[in-house]
Image 1 (cartoon, one colour):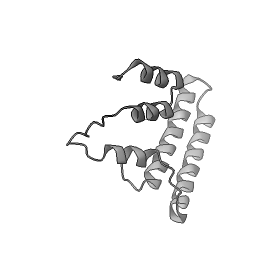
Image 2 (cartoon, rainbow, N blue to C red; image 1 turned 90 degrees about the vertical axis):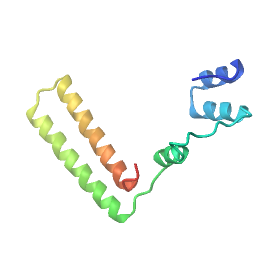
Image 3 (cartoon, helix red, strand yellow; image 1 turned 90 degrees about the horizontal axis):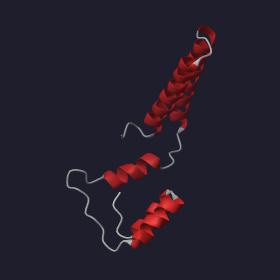
Image 4 (cartoon, rainbow, N blue to C red; image 1 turned 180 degrees about the vertical axis):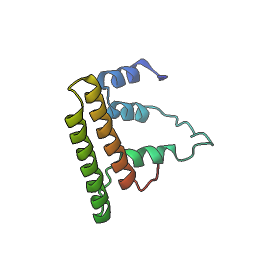
Amino acid sequence: MAYRDDTAKESITSLGSLAGAARYDAQCNTQAEPPAYAPTIGYENRHIVAHHSPDRDQIQRITAIRQAALNFLDVIDANCPRCADATAAKRKVREAMMTANAAIVLNGSI
């Protein structure tokens, strides 16, 4: 990341957070124009990280995915020895569940 001055660099690295990055952007007087090929990057980023409350239909679909993930985790526990590979498999089930749930609440907008 390029820094315009050492003070801004210190504020970001010392805070190490989005707040520090936002403060750095606020300190800058110039705003770079977004590239022509990606006019909605800022919107998409905010949309991705925003809280999305599921509606009733989405809650039912999320619950079905969560139950399927739980069933698969039970199958892994019943059939795999306790080892690093089994732990990795369980983490991937969790990741798949979370990504599928994100697809539901974001309505496939990504």
